[in-house]
Amino acid sequence: MTKLTYLDSLPPRILGIETEYGVLAAGQDGRRVVDADTVGRELFAPIHQRYQASSVFLENGGRLYLDVGSHPEYATAECLDLQDILAQDRAGAEILRDMAAAASQRLTDQTGIPTQVHLLKNNLDSAGNSCGCHENYLLYRTSQFRALADALVTFLVTRQIFLGAGALLRIQGETKFCLSQRAFQIDDTVSAATTTTRPLVNTRDEPHGDAKLYRRLHVIVGDSNVLESPTRAKIAMMNLLLGALEAGGDFSDIALNNPIGALQEITQNLPHQGKPLELVSGKQFTALELQAEFCSRLSRIYSEATLPAGYREVLHEWQAWIKALAAGDYLALSGVLDWPTKLTLLEKLRSRQGLTWGDSKLARLDLAYHDLVAGLNLESRGLAQRLTATHEVETAKTTPPQNTRATLRGRFIRCAQDHNLQFQADWTKLRLRGKAGGDITLSNPFATESESVAKLLRAMETL
Image 1 (cartoon, rainbow, N blue to C red):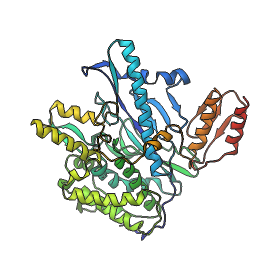
Image 2 (cartoon, rainbow, N blue to C red):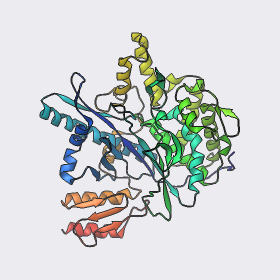
Image 3 (cartoon, rainbow, N blue to C red):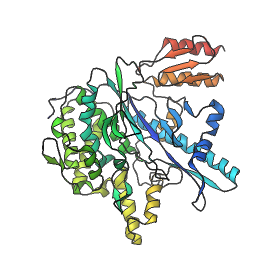
Image 4 (cartoon, helix red, strand yellow):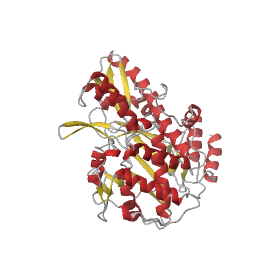
């Protein structure tokens, strides 16, 4: 049981989300026009023409690239605040959506067939391949990484009852509605591997900062959320838990005996119907009861804390979601969380037309839920909650968060582009090609000012 009484604050932490998207180019009859490789190349053709690369850092501080398997991927800039990470994540989706619209027109011109490129924010693309949504959290080297990662396992396994995106999956010859798309793609708890196995937490040590001070926690179990409430919640909940663990909190009494088995068991049942899961101690709790325990302990630990914007609201939402799901009232969370929203839509169609879960109409609706180009437009129809304002997202498309290293990267990239100068940038390096002294290392992810960057910007103004 946790040894902490309370904390008076939440330590500052760099946060980020990486999202892979599925793509599909279809004609008016819904048939595939070209394969995914062709779609990916066409999607990134203007970027490749401009930069001679399909991986670039943008003036908003984020990274846009074409990943293995022709999946477009967007990684947010380094963020400190919940609202910034929401705006950055949505900005990336809208940038890619605009790229998809332009690619649709080019493919239409090339093939002579009216073509639409669909951008799918989910974890299973049109061919059944896996797409990931990864979370990144800065850790301080003073913490015992493996012990901390192990302590997260029970939380990560059970959080799908709120954060799953929902999916119709074929299991042992039967199509079932599952809470998470990702649950059956994970086969390990904590590991450095990402291809031979898929763990909940990847331990590869890439801090993207001063390796003596920092380490990066890379969580790869999460679903790609369409709605903003679960996106905010997954970051806030994890950050609250990390703060407690780093301060000495002990949650070992609720460690699961078989985490991967539990992950796949939980996803197949609605939370109020969930089966008891065995703990290492021999006790049994349902996923809902375990999440209630995490929520209760963290609410107590931070009861007297001064928390950044949004965190207190997430703690209150967490409690409300537990209450609704315990009562079996997932309809109360439609428009708030993804899987209840999707299940509500699927049940309405299934009931109206008398369909079985394996019907292709339901499969199409399942996929349409994740289509950012020609999907369901739930927010504009008043069927889903939105937490960001339009102007925040528009700003995030071109402007990095102002309280992290991303602002330095953004200034550098914008200045180089304004002066038509060739440059290279990544998370820690800035380089102006062909100029002596044009290489800068940014090892502090919290830094917002740098004399080296300022000097280089002044020099660029004269070139």
